[in-house]
Image 1: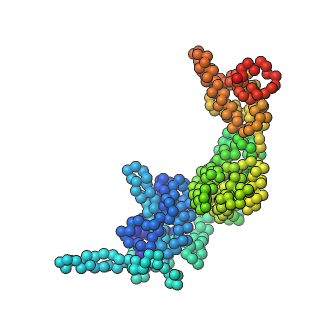
Image 2: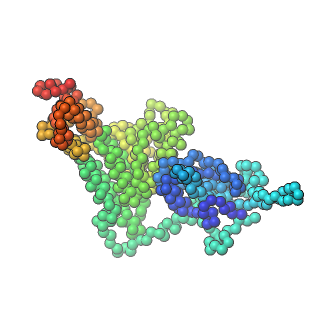
Image 3: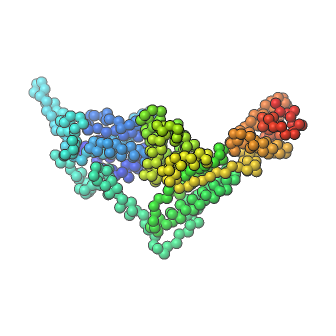
Amino acid sequence: MRITQGTFSFLPDLTDEEITKQIQYALDNGWPCSVEFTDDPHPRNTYWEMWGLPMFDLTDAAGVLAEVNECRKAKPEHYIRLNAYNANYGKQTVALSFIVQRPSEEPGFRVERQEWHDRAIRYTLHPYAADKPHGQRYQQNGQQ
Amino acid sequence: MTPPDRLPGSKIPATRVGFGMARPGSNAAGPQAPEEAEEKETLPPDARIDLAKERAETGIDDVFNALDSELVGLAPVKNRIREIAALLLVDRARAQFGLSTSRPNLHMCFTGSPGTGKTTVAMRMADLLYRLGYLRRGHLISVTRDDLVGQYVGHTAPKTKEVLKRAMGGVLFIDEAYYLYREDNERDYGQESIEILLQVMENQREDLVVILAGYKDRMDAFFVSNPGMGSRIAHHIDFPDYTLQELDDIGKLMIRAEGYKFSPDAEKTFREYLNRRMKQPRFANARSVRNAIERARLRHASRLMEADKPVGKEELTTLSSEDFLSSRVFANSDSARTSDDSLTE
C-alpha cells in the first residue's frame, strides 16, 4: 500500500529533477531544508530520524540533493523525506515536507480491533513492517 | 498486498520512472538522460549564429565594463578573462549546433601579491559565468583554511562538505589555498579537505567552480606537492603588481568615490608617498593605497577640528599635502625633504 504522507504524495513519485525544483523553490523562499528517514511510516509517527543537521545558508539545490542522495545510499530501503522549515516569525513551522524515497515494497497496514468494555470495539492501525524489529524492516529478499 | 502501480483514475503508466534514485545495481542516470537530450533543439547545419548578438544578450559586456572601470591596469588578467569568455560563448554556439559540448573545466587559480584585486576579479568572474549560463546562481563564497579544516579527527569532512554545499551553484573562492597543505605535518587534516575538494571539483563540475588564490611562489609549491590539484585547474591567472602610475590612478579613483579631491600640491605628495611606500616592506598594492587614504582622511578631519574655523565645502572635500606628509613613510626616510620634516611627527 502506497503511503501518502506530506506534499505531492498523491502524485507519482517525483524525479530528481522535480525534487531539485522543489528544493530550489524552498531555498528561494528562505526555508532551510533538512533530510529525515524512518522505517516506521505510521501516520502518527511525526518524528523521523534526522539525516544530519538542517542545512542553513544554502542558495542552490545541488547541495541539498547531494545530501538526499547520500541518505539514499545509506538507507536504500527506508522512507526518506525532505522538510523545508519556514522560520519567519508567526510561521515557525514546516512549510513543505515531501517523501523523496520509499521502499521498493510497501506492505501497508492492518486494522486491529480491540475489545473494550461494554462490547465496544476500538480500532487502530498497525503497519505490517512493524512486526519486525527496528532495523530489519523493508529488507529485500536475500538482503540481511 | 502489492503496491498499486497506478493511482485510481490517473493516467500514469504502470512503469513509473520512480524517484530516479540509484538503487544498488541500477544505473542512476538511466531513465533521465535521454529526456534531457531531447529538450535541446539542434540548429540545422547551415544556420548562422550572430556571436555579437549572443554576446549582447548575455550581458557580459556589463561585466567587462565594470572590470574596466573598477580595476585599474591588470591588462593581462583582463585579456585572459576576455579569452575565457570568448571560449565559453563559442562553446555555447557550438552546443546549439549539437557539436561536442563537454563542459569546459572552469576551475581557476589566481596568483599574485596581496591587494592586486584577486577577490574583486573572482566576484566579477562569478557574475560572468552566471551570465554565460555556466553557473546557476553566481554567488561567491570566500573561505580560508579555517573554514575547511577541522580541529579533530572526523571534523574536517563535514566542515568541508558544509562549505561545498553552500558554494553549490556559485564560486568557491579559497584564499591562501596553500595553507590547506602543510608539508611539515603529514597528519594534518588539510589533506583530507583537499581530497574532498578534488572529488567535488572532478565529479560536480557543473555545480560549482573553485578558484584558488594566493602568492605565486607558494601556490606553485602547493601544486608541486598536490599534483592532482594542479591538473584539475585549467586557468592559471597571474596578477602583476601595480606600477606607480596605476597605484596613482587607483588612489584617485578611491578618492573620487569617497567624495574627496587632492589639492594641487597634494597630488604630487601622494605620488611621492606611493613611491616611498612601494619600497617599504609589507606593501599590499591597492590595499595599502586604501589605508593611506583612510589615514589621510583621519588627519584631514583632525586638522579641520584643530583649526577651529568655519569650513565650507571646499575645505571638507580637499585633502592637502600635509595630510600625507605627516605619515610615517616620510618620517622614516632619510631623503632630503628638510622643509617637510617640521610637519612630521
